[in-house]
Length: 502
Image (tube, rainbow, N blue to C red; front, side, top):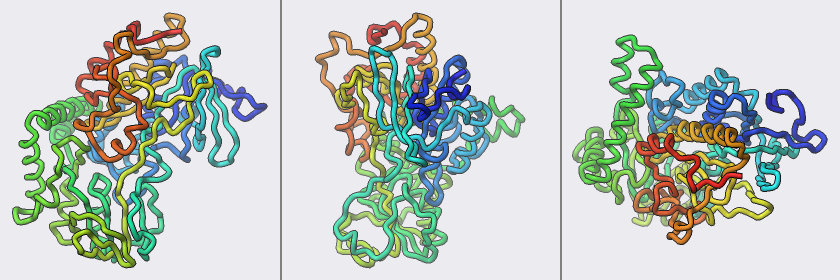
């Protein structure tokens, strides 16, 4: 029984730190999944999940803007171990309900501490453990933990504040300027003129959700994004339900079907990008007609899948444009004015409300101050092992999901890997494991975390200098290739010479 369960040695009492076999940072989709895997694969391990927000959910708790929903299907964004029974594109509330069921069904609530913010993480080679300190967000009391193993599930962006560029004249605008990540509950947009700056999945969600209530809503974009419109249902799933197949079978079959389709589509994007481009643009034309200026407003400068591609259920944003309730302007901002935005073209967009759907700021390992034997860790000096571990960092795994497939697919893969690693260390009497470059790899060029010719969204490029490096070898990078990793990860040789045990 872990010390959290037996009530002994609570942090903050008599200055003592609570000790756990595993400490999980974050109670979002990754942290809840990690808790499940430890519960079922390593039931003898004590663990705690610490979360700085007031409840579970991560992204799905942070964002409260109108229409907030997934931009990938829940059959693969959901966990492999719990069937998803709703429509493939789901709302934040539906996703949190699903996560809440996982927490309840697996008794994870008793392992979870909310409003606990970790500020420092220090590894001691002598003690073979992590010491973590932080603060309770609700009481400002200090908190302290020690742990044998650290599982970072805190996500990859700052939850407190989104990314908003500085435009000239922002102070002059008389109305509210709102970032979707900090959406005010009392924002009244009924019968208002609204401009949404941005063209990603967030903009494509907000615009159809608000269009019926605004007097008009405009998507202002510097350059277009690829969208993939389609029905918000999976035909094979509905057919299996009509046949009375049990839900866990339907879940597994649907996942395999979707993953095969995604694999084929991804390969097509790289092998025949112009064909895929035309297919995606034809999907937009079906809603907007041949007379609409698709070239200006919906034809990106980059090739498909070099940035995240958002699924648009039932083409709802295009329906709003076709109805005249929404419109798209492709231009650059000269400055904000008292009544709206002056564009480089000289046109003025009048607005009562401006929404900056301009993305987020990357957070490398939760901005926690890491040290190893009192030496500060600069993650940009490390090399990543398969996008989950880092050279010189003992007993730590980071969950960083997929861009071209659902994030949660990697949560399950890493859950299996971590549990297998913990069991291997127990069986061999080892207390720590650290990735290291082999002698013939130490002088290889250290490359950015992601090849920008392969994937290049703004939030990654803005913060690439902060991220760990990669080598031009599969095991020393995050390949973003689920379809290979699902076979490679179970075959990782835990006695390979890339691992140093103590």
